[in-house]
Length: 321
Image 1 (cartoon, helix red, strand yellow):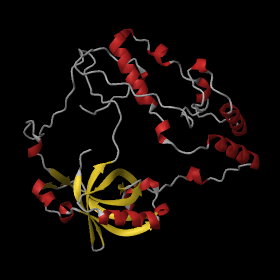
Image 2: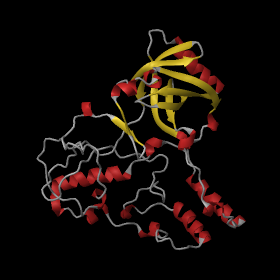
Image 3: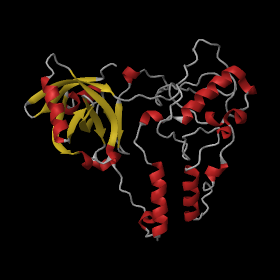
Image 4: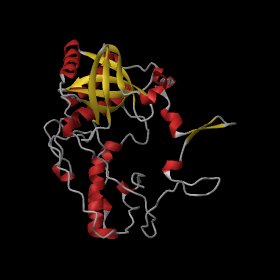
């Protein structure tokens, strides 16, 4: 991994040199846009609406428009901001971990020691472990001052960006406040269904079904082109799991009973399911994930077959455009 940021953690008078690394990565298949008639690549150009010229990045500044006036902010203006120059992760509080609402969490970064003597790093890590607290910090990254939560994961410190308090919307939905009458039997049946789905969380056992199907679609299109029968390849929808999609009111007790009965029965292998797979489509504990297939080399001749008829290909991405 390559460090994306270097600086230090300011912990009172203690200074802990660290390097930050992205803790997560995108596994999505990289798609680009093409003209459906001839497969030509669609590209976007940055053009000035005044002179009509194509503008390079080095000649692009930022601006703020209040509706009447426009203020242009150059790169040197942005770099002059004190927060932008900061190379410190400032610890401002230590709080109980359960006080940080998961809705506030953003991207995560690993913090590795950046010193020949990592004693200060080890001290801070051990302190967080033994006190079972999370450090609330402030730091600057990519021209933004950010709030963060610093905690321990394994033997490294992890920094997670946090939304600012005014960035989280209030949930004001009158429908959710309605007092629905729940019978003791309904609650008992619901708890029984929850119990059947209960297990230890093992993220490695879950797979992104859409991306797996998209890779299959791409491989089959490369082999068969427009002759690919997508309905035969991916199969029809399981109508039994789509009963409530229309929004019709159903008998709650009946739905709970059928859910419990269905969860207790093994999937029919002839219908494309596998034993141990739940009614939600997620793999149950102990189910091994199918190894990811290698990507097809890019040097193969580009096909210009249309993919509009394929269900998985309807969602286009701008990544790489």
